[in-house]
Image (cartoon, rainbow over all chains, first blue to last red; front, side, top):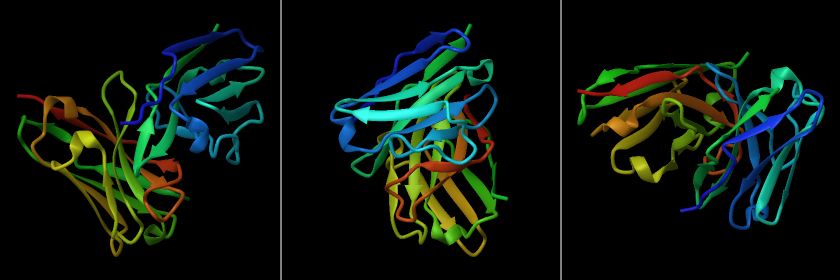
Length: 106
Length: 122
């Protein structure tokens, strides 16, 4: 079955750029989606179709997808961005989520 | 305003059954595919099942095939998940989520419910 691999944790200083990767076989052939989840809350999509931002998502969130890796980039990271981030893709009529990455802003 | 409200969670013994419901409002329910996504305590998201807007097509994750059944009643704007032969590893918060497409096997989840907790234990 298809798998998406994310680093368990990423740390970033306030104001710096955070990059969270999501790896899967030929992932660039699929669309990648990214969700943010804060403690006790439901997930919220922050990037869809590799690099599109839903309305209401700050411009500091961006995405890319090339080769085997999709990347979520948060520029000028703020304390409010501290959360778990999960990537998602479709493979053979099934949804696959990455294991999630805890972003710590310190 | 889009709203998704899950119900039906609770404590159940291994081997038991439970039916979850998700009542929705704020959009044309029959036009959109829906999914159930779960999250075990302290773990990541795991997709469970999806159903097309018409209800004609369903898709299931490997871990629940043959045990869980997704369905919908478009006249009641309600999504269901019938869970049978429950195991300890099914313990999780179960979210219903609206997909942006109608077909059931594409797109992303633009709205999520608040989740309902299912605990499988003796």
